[in-house]
Image 1 (cartoon, helix red, strand yellow):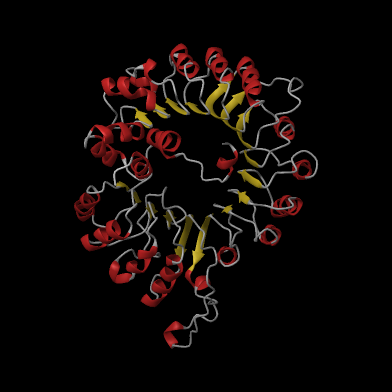
Image 2: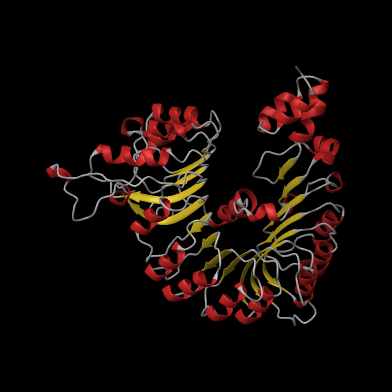
Length: 509
């Protein structure tokens, strides 16, 4: 049965190449699948993009446009029905009038992510942004923001549901004009200078419907007492918090966690997270959906294991290290496997709703093969997992020899146990010594049909690695063996990779 309704339903599950093939079948299929084929366009020198003539013909179907304006050859008048616009600009002197015109000709625009890495936004651009009647989400990255532009930004915030601002410096202006930002539900602030911390806190207090905040700072003492008052006085709906790079001590974190009636998400890096903070977090175990606590030395492996066996609603978990002995229910004193006196008493992970897991599982070097298989059986229960990172803490950054203390991703070592992870689309093991062969890579392609990103060296021999990676080109699967250089990093993070994993996304639409 060939019905348009069925074709439209199936189109949601096809990739670009499959949609291109479907378009060529016949006229009726062409009319059905063309809107899906052109619904999202990437226009840069790095990505494969449609011909200009095709975009002119089918530009009415484009809903998401990811644009690098330096290309200079984008047919401006083609896209007038955008729902989402992502701009990635390295140029020090962008064509501000051209960009403002692009924004103005899309009155249906609801999401704008503008990343100006080397240029200060001009008034005409911010005026165009403030005139978007349906804009609900704005992400602005820039070196500095003038007073005039900051004023237009706050005018826009009155109707925004989500604001993300990353800037080195913002000119200070009085907040008296804006008594309240009534629609803001999610706020991300990363301003290095210009906005004093108490000024930023006043901005936060003007968001009575705020549910999620990410507040990033590399200097200064955290205003613990004032922040704790947000939960009862200014932002009673606040349940999702990210506090990165603050000079937060263990007792300060505990006070924040104790003040929040119910915490759904807690994120923070470089924090003094320790036993007091962990005990305060325990009270929220029944509600937590996201825990992201990388680079917190006080968070022990045993604490990580407790989270995995206690938080039934967890969707995302990111931490530094989990030791094999904690997964297997062992103690350092009782580790007598060589004498045959060891008894395994592992606690089953209950976080079976996990979608993303970032955790270096160590303590396997020189241990019996059965240890790895027991750990893989725990991972195999996470059938909703889409992203798995088992990277050593410094695996992405240092240039030393890869560690042999970690999971061995070979069939003979038990990789086949992970055949239940059918939704997995990304796996990272950068910094781990591997010795995969062709059968291991082909198993991944067969067992994980959605796999598209692999991070790490599949073989310790450079020559053999290059041979094996050709197998991934059949999918194709993108392979990254090291941290990208700075330019590529910004491009991938801001332009390609960024998609909100937070459930607040539902609140914005």
